[in-house]
Length: 179
Image 1 (cartoon, one colour):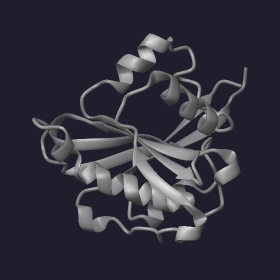
Image 2 (cartoon, rainbow, N blue to C red):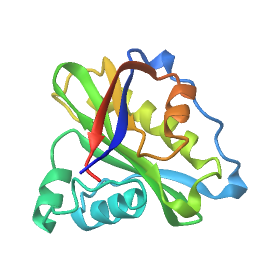
Image 3 (cartoon, one colour):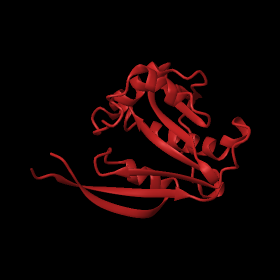
Image 4 (cartoon, rainbow, N blue to C red):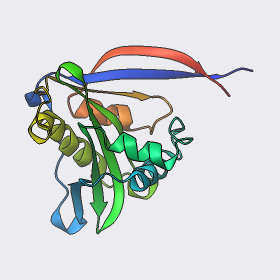
């Protein structure tokens, strides 16, 4: 069976001042970003499937509700959710790692909210929160690196958004997807 070539880019920032924030949406746009401080596996699964459904996000689909809950309760793991006029529009998942690295594990918008200027703001806001992660999680090392990866199956504007925010590509791989 022949697959499709999938390119994966690994990107990073190594200092907070490298972040180039996007414009904050005007007040009338009704956009807010809030940390989901009470871990909810059900809400995490909703965000994952609503954002990633058309971007080939499948690795967490088999997870049982208990696995979702345990995952989101891990120390140093946070969900930051963008809302537009009270409706979830997208999210960003942070995971504190060893030696001061923070990974942006997942990031994206629900299809209806793409192209409205929310993505750049959410990425900027969430990345700034990654640099402050140790303040919210005592005992974690100070953040010295924020990193993520994206691939050619993600939205067509993902890589460009990361680069506009200052993220640098550190590694690129190409693999075959099953298909």
